[in-house]
Amino acid sequence: MTPMTAIRDAIRSNARQYGMVMALAVIVILFEILTGGLLLRPLNITNLIMQNSYVLILAIGMMLVIITGHIDLSVGSVVAFVGATSAVMLTGWGLPVPVVVVLALLTGGLIGAWQGFWIAYVRIPAFIVTLAGMLVFRGATMIVLGGESIGPLPESLRALGSGYVPDVAGGEVHLLTLLLGVLASAALVASQVRIRARGLRYGLPVGSRNLFVAKCAALVVVVMVFAYVLAIHNGIPIVGLVLVALIVAFSFVMNSTTVGRRIYAVGGSEKAAMLSGVKTRRTTFWVFVNMGVLSALAGLVFMARLNAATPRAGTMFELDAIAAAFIGGASAAGGVGTVVGAVVGALVMGVMNNGMSLIGLGVDWQQAIKGLVLLAAVAFDIYNKNRVGTSGAARRRAAQRPVPPPGDGGSEPGAPPPAARATGSGRG
Image 1: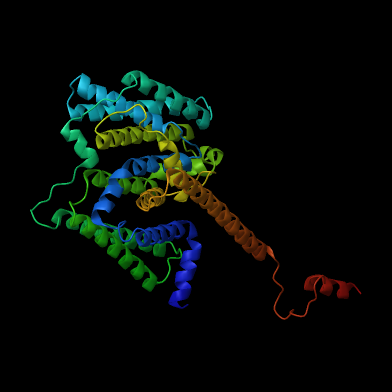
Image 2: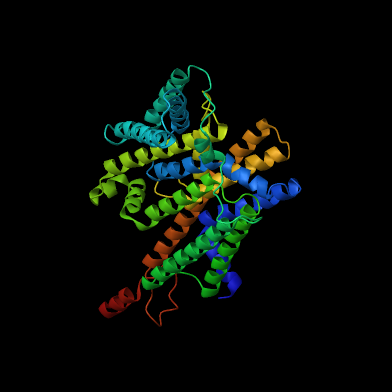
């Protein structure tokens, strides 16, 4: 097998994963050309991270919800409500920032538990429960704020949305960011080596060694270039470090723990998972608790970036998170999706928003284009499932087709099997 054939087969067999990564690369290159090099400037990349941090946080939680076969329409309203109550605790009650952060996350967890109870144990469809939650918490936000914005906020909280990780040494290049890039590259390579070793141990197809080395080298180059671009500006934003921690933690949970396997099992077939001993209701309940906590974190980040809590905060955030999950490879039927895919989907949306704004495209056209991209991503998902299903059925039919014995290559279609012919001649 030639290297080009191996690469083509790898891309074809992983079209759901590599397809959106390649699409993201094409979108970045396109807008880099259209904006005259503005898109990939260090300042704009930093702004891109900060402006889309809340969507990335919500997309991670939404991916888990969609994998279980549900949906959450309330996340935007929860973002607004947690932001409103946190602002009141900070400015009205005078509570310290660490206490407010803990209380905000607990509030989000309680909201997720409330909605998860109705969905998992009362068996009300998630669409109805979270639609009700969207209305309830949007109204509660208006009540808490009285229709007015509350601000400004303490400097220590504003750092969560617009601050940077301090460097270990002064200089034009942020050394700590480069060190974090090296550590991230080493962790990624070690993860890929471990996955390949596991595949070899269980006899799974892993591809050629040359392709594996090229993949690892590409990952290291991308991570180090990204770290260098951030290092020559102000370094990695604090919210960027939070995002890295979330991506690593949730990727580990979904890929390497029993909890992750249970979430995939519930989404694949809830009845089969229940018969296998998985506590499906408890799994669904905790997935919504997790979504509530991440919504609260997104609310704190968004409020910190605005330096205020506003009644209209969180508007349409739920649609951005859902779109990011589906663009990143989630299936509407459940059981399919990855955390990294959700991040890629959110970056596709964020780069498109940023690029279209830089070239001066109106909001009306931006909404229309994002809708078409979402439709194309779901159509791509359905096409891949149909293609895989068709090829799988063909393989099963080929496996079930009887194989004629050696030396019987001259049988015509429709002729009886050799054994039958022999028996017939014997009776004659």
